[in-house]
Length: 525
Image 1 (cartoon, rainbow, N blue to C red):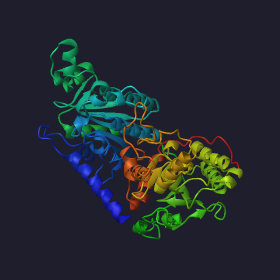
Image 2: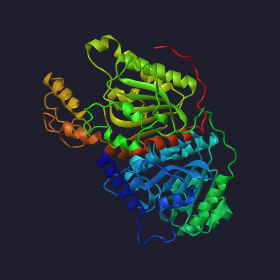
Image 3: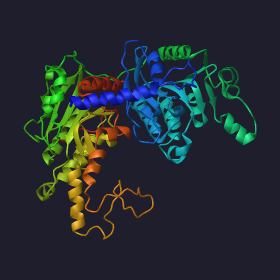
Image 4: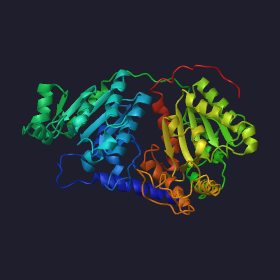
């Protein structure tokens, strides 16, 4: 595990180095995205960054951090979501993954009722990918839809225009509560000079078309003019300081106590081969206060650990896998989730799951019906949910243990984590079995990287030879934590020893939004 953590740190370090590179033609008075965030946040506070490796190796273009840096910072003792365009990466333009990352940051602000600060410096949509960034529901337009929904919920939004703010992106400051623009470098326009000339024949400079003086004194689009970036970021801090009172969800907390066991020992708990079992209680003992877990139904459904604990003083209900899920495990989970929901206690899921038990005996016992109860309980829980993929996350086990589709407030992966519909060896055996029973028509046994026949339109053209000899290798690559985080299937890969701190930060953020009212009583399973 320590070797995997070192690899993770190197990967993140390279991304930050790429983001910090200063192109020679750039204005020397402009800071990088991360430098802007550092100057915006309170001195000595941490930056909880989301998905720093998103977009890594996804396109032929170098897209460090997807060309946008997002996370949670503290400004005047108030947690805020920050979305910072990185103009040093393809001019801050939006690739498909950039939009996905921007939307995820807004989702976090919405769910937790956190102010959102946009540090705008973008050329708009990356035109070569226009069919993947513009027309669909969760494309570029969704950013502004979210802004409207956020303001309707009373969530403050502040924009700081530090460079180009072009085309649809001009709506970011226009739809914010307040915005600041930097004189001489900040510009806001629906159509930039090249488009204006192409459409109307009018030749006009960027500053004349949409600079600080125009929008600060004539159009009224901007509320504050700054002489430079330092002043602009200070003005944004001042705006945050005047947002007024905010109410937090009440939660009965205790004094924070360290675990009895060193967190560094977690490096030696998860085996290199996930087929080798380990006791998830060893992980829990190094995460929770005093290493104390009050277990629920300890002797029933023993392949799932359920119980209550405190994490940095916050009460949590923990569900952790200790084997495959049986009917008893699923019923135990549904009961426990309902109890936590009734009591208003946030849920933490620690995944190492290969799925639900299969076979004639278990189907006859109603494993599908019992698993459905678990999935329903996870889906309907009103309390905040947090998920950490420690080891495997396969098949329907991912659903029952609050995978991405079940909207955990945050979902993190350890470097050891694997995620797929099933393991590679199992997938290969399934397809061989289907082929041997002639369920696959003759001549269609060659599959592309998505499992689709290469004969139809839209196929990748990549072939796995008949007999599926490379399918296991394909699954091995596609189930890795890096493959996941590149595509934003999670909120980032974390060092295991940071898990306690990251979960505590998430729990604190979740208290800024009401949990909602409990709609039903407890059904004993």
